[in-house]
Image 1 (tube, one colour):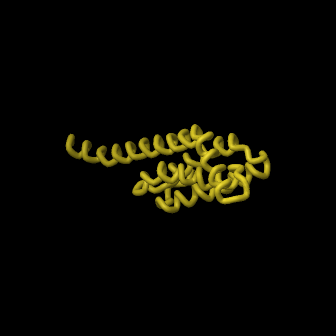
Image 2 (image 1 turned 45 degrees about the vertical axis):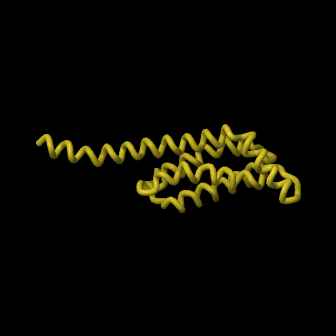
Image 3 (image 1 turned 30 degrees about the horizontal axis):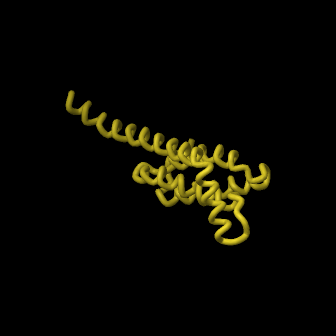
Length: 132
């Protein structure tokens, strides 16, 4: 596993680009299956939360839903007009909100654990110095 190096913006761009790529794969191989798209969203959200640098941890659960929406737009199945595309996007987001919540929850849990580990590492040297 590579060390976390992405900034908050880089993590968001990584997640958006990955989800657009996943949407393209779902469109080509699985006939625009939103189930497969949602299933692949969870590991992308986890990867974004794992690879963001510690100073920007809060951005991972924020960028995950944005990436989901950016990628689902091409495969949402709306008609040719702007209104039809928008309705297809809203329908896809509402019908597959479970995947959206699951990926966001995974990203948030990873961020909370990483932050707790960072806080624990900062407090550990203080405790050992004060007990000596």
